[in-house]
Image (tube, rainbow, N blue to C red; front, side):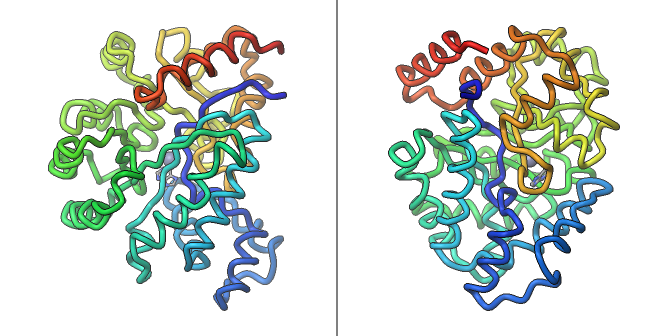
Length: 329
Ligand SMILES: Nc1ncnc2[nH]cnc12
Ligand SMILES: [Zn+2]
């Protein structure tokens, strides 16, 4: 049994495994520019975030119907359960689907078909987080939030993802204000490839409650001090960082230094189908490469539940934390 954990940084579109991509392509009559799953896997050699995003958006073409989104989410939840995930806060990128002519209902209702029964089917509680693409305009983000209004009972929060450098958080101030007024929780990718200033800006201007990645905070000691003092969680994704070359090797990952600094770190899989591992694969990788102790691993698992948006279900959070405390390695 793997260590119980919450997964807080997971793009559902990034869980599209090559086999499912080909199955959905066949079901929907979509022609992929790869002969087979082996040839597709060959394309999983990324130089940086953008080279990954190009493939990530290209493969989304196979997602057409509610059932496709349901099957995608269900496949993720099946894998996550086997990796000890007890709670998952799942990102989705509606703009990428609306741009292909799909409507918000197809995406949200499809995902919800799997998420709505996830506790019974997989023993995983879930939340859904709508992400805006930061390389699209602020107006497009506002329109997307409008399109999501009929589905807000299913959406817990908003996030910000896609190409970071050159797209600072300030651009999305208005949409974050509007979302806050609607009672939505707020997170944003910051400090993955972008500078530490983007993290500060996302905290100050967007009012975010968690930083997705946040790796580059380590370049700014005052920012680290602030993140520690304000107990702002960071959703780190070690295998993603290696594949997208934000760190050279896993052994160079700053996670131990971040924990030593007192940061509230969590470990997540980001886009597991592309980066070579799901949640517990990331835990095992950092354990092996960074020599994390059992106490540190337990701390990471506790942090994941402490950082999760379970304020509406504190009883459940307490149950999950008790499971972590009782876990025998
Ligand atoms: N790691 C990542 N960074 C930014 N945008 C993303 N979209 C999917 N994965 C992402
Ligand atoms: Zn991400």
